[in-house]
Length: 296
Image 1: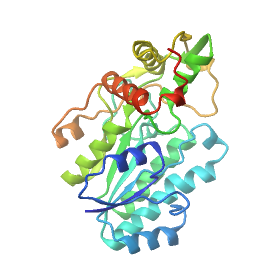
Image 2: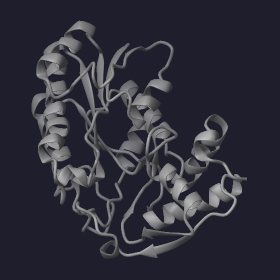
Image 3: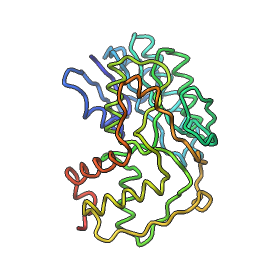
């Protein structure tokens, strides 16, 4: 099987490449080699490689900066997705497009199912929703995969940033009234391989099991870091409300996704987010101890 992945240098892209089976021929171009905003570049890459599947993990993910850079966000998240879908359609490839919980307003007070109406409240969310619509218009059989709160040993993410703050500060404030589900990219990458093998279609939701506020997530990071002796004297965590933490972009207050349909389709339930967080931190200690300024 031949697979082309866009966004290969991102958190999910790197994990997807790392977990690729030996039988797969994988093309993982850099952002410079595959600029998804350019239709000619995308079509040339797809036509030249002739993949069986395209995995679109490329994305403009700077949620707050998107409010002042809407053109850039839409160029990648909408137009880039559309270009890949057109390329897939013209060459007969299947497409899996990665989207986000931010397509929902977060006001339902219950987990959002794939069939629920999307109503994004930020530029980032709107750009991702329009990307979904563009993909479905060009390629109705594509997989739209919504996920949330990604973290990994790669790049910059909440877990690694929190470890740094817990090391450098005496007191760290964290929002406690935004609820979602932390998701380890290794678990998500394995799920994507399962989706490809199962040849799913349509809209699917996938995260780890469970739910948490950002404060809950931070507290679990702190607890695991202490257990693993990653931080000698971690900062105190202080819960705050959203209005106490000004940000350019509005966030959904409750963006937990209902994954039951997808879990049934794949035949398994993923680990709880706390279990996967522990596994990720152990992996981080084992593979990159120097980058974290381990103090213990």
